[in-house]
Image (cartoon, rainbow over all chains, first blue to last red; front, side, top):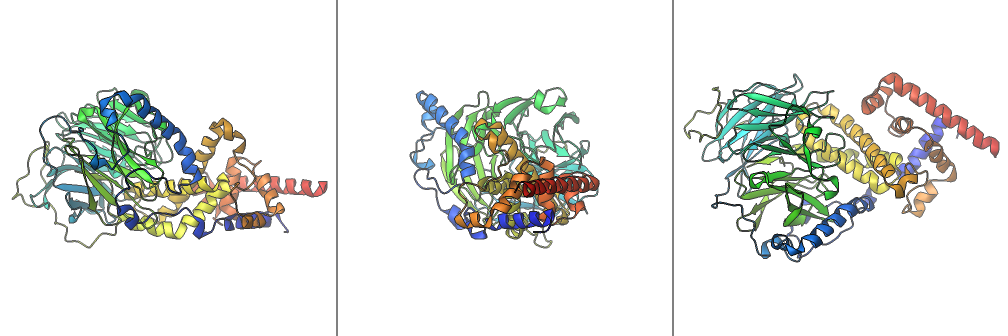
Length: 391
Length: 197
């Protein structure tokens, strides 16, 4: 070796050679995850890092299960059998509502918005962007399963987002796309799940950012056309979920680079200012929820749904929004590649779609849960379809 | 288009479409873009992360999280030339988070940037990392974080100063001066070792 630079190159090259392609952590493929989960949790060859990071959440989860043993509801969360086989009393209050017929997802390269059959997952149509240079980048459902609030922003030519009311025909095709009569949103959404709406669609929440700035979250009330914003210490939020009445925003504080996955709640009536200071912690980072995934709120803002990993298994669990206490395990399946788990609950609270993505050649798998009956169906979706879904 | 203020209304089935109904070309799925990037760059990025966090499992986690973040951010990253810089920046930030988390743990505090390869390294890895190479990592462990990042990006990925500046979010001049100081510090340390011998 003749110089420091040569020694650095040599050392780096040698260090790199200690990691060969065949030795990287095995990654599941779509066929693997498409199999139903086995009767009980199994623990595959997760990395040491993952196992270490899961110690705290697993310990916390174990404590929750132990403490809550006396409560009948929590007793339903026994993991001794597949979810559909156990007694089911998790139905939302009120009469049984039919499942929505359509899924809508932004994020297709090309800027279109995908509309899918909610029963089969098959794509019905792709709605082109609403204008030249615009891209659909957010979607939120309303209690009318043919009406959605969707967002579109320009492709690198400006920092704003337009909001639209999307209506579908009975066959799931485009019936109308009308701009909402609200002030233009400053900034672009950080992800398609950074848009949410109340069941009526009259209160809309979002998180947006302009390049090089810190982000913010906002709530728009269509009735009054008023906008209220809160500031964030980083780029913005990936995941927002609004209670059906529009009173509370729930969010995962994971931001573009980092964040610890704490789940927080912010009253939409809170005064403008720092969002983290105005909000309260619902679930600490140690809850083990998938920090890169999304959470959803249901039960009139009283129940949170989110995913966590347990070895090769992903678990969809419900939590009390008031206390953060885990209430029940709703579904268990084999996760793909550690990709983010996306949770989408219908505004009626009766149905949930969970999906995660594969990064290493895997695909998108959707599981559709009927909370009235506990029935779980796998929705076949093509690899690469958007996972941020509203229905 | 007409403005609407109540999206809760049932649309008129016969309403005229406001824009064409999906007759355009088939869009390329976002996931396919990420998978293509993963196939091309994951190994290199894991090796880069391993250089910085000195822990194989953490390195794999960091890179996986970076691709996850990319997938989520893809809709707003319209310039696909920016995807790889985004990934590099996400990996660097992930490494910083991993090291910060490690520092927070009292049990692992002394491993904030260990010079030794991970305990599970193979015999082959031990051979590859000869004493001389270990000395390089030991010396690097005493450098500031940014210096280690600049050296890894410059001498492992062979990035230009402009590319390093973009990845780290600093000026090109900062990259240049940081690299010069780091190399000078290492040179002094290597000479000192040699003098002792």
